[in-house]
Amino acid sequence: MGPGRSPIAQTQEMGEWTMEHPVVTPPFYHERTFHVVSGLVAAAVVVLVYRIVRRRRQRNNCPVDFVNEAVLVVDLVDSTYLATHYGDGMAMRAKNVLKDRILQRADARGLSFVENIGDGYFMTFPSVEAAVDIAAELVRDLKNHPEELASELPLDVRVGISYGEILVDPRGGRHGTAINKAFRLEGLSAESFTRVEGEEGPKEIADRNRIFLDEEAVRELNPSAVPLRSVGFCALKGFSGLHRVFEVLP
Image (tube, rainbow, N blue to C red; front, top):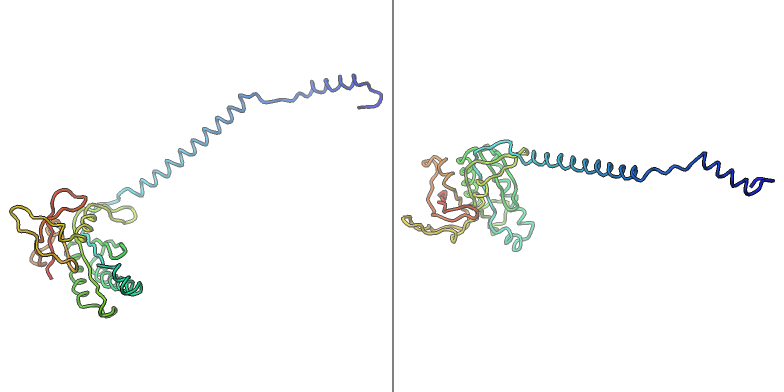
């Protein structure tokens, strides 16, 4: 408060100053509009990002090609037994032997695709003949028992071979029913087969060191080049009807 000035004068001056310099408060609807606009912008950004991600995923999942190939699935029998009775080190050695033996042959026969499936391999080839030759050589080779393994260590495999149209994704991966069928063939047991009227009953079936083919694969083969026998008919999980299965003879 200035000297010699009454409180009333002071009050009057403050009132005048307030009138000259009013405190401006933005209308409430301006704040509300800002929040609404900000929310719309954020929502638009989220939608845009979602669409970009979805389109990329769709591109990655889109087929780039369809090819007809032979599918070979080979599986090491009783791998768990090998680990529990001979140790993890010996079981791993057995898997490495299988890997070396089959990949060497596959590379020389025009291998199109290969994927490790834990205890074996899933492969595709341009021809059924290449797949059958590799499988037959592998089974014969393992019967002679590889020198890298202990003489008492069993090393047995089962093989399934199919043929059909396969979807190839942008990364070269393979997809399709022909692949699923090869896996089903590899895992068949004697109980999988059934008697069909007018046909011979199921033959004796080995549970290891065998090569099973579907009818589509057999149609692609030169019958005089590969000795085969009809094993019988069976139901395959995920497939309708009964399917005739063939076996490559030793």
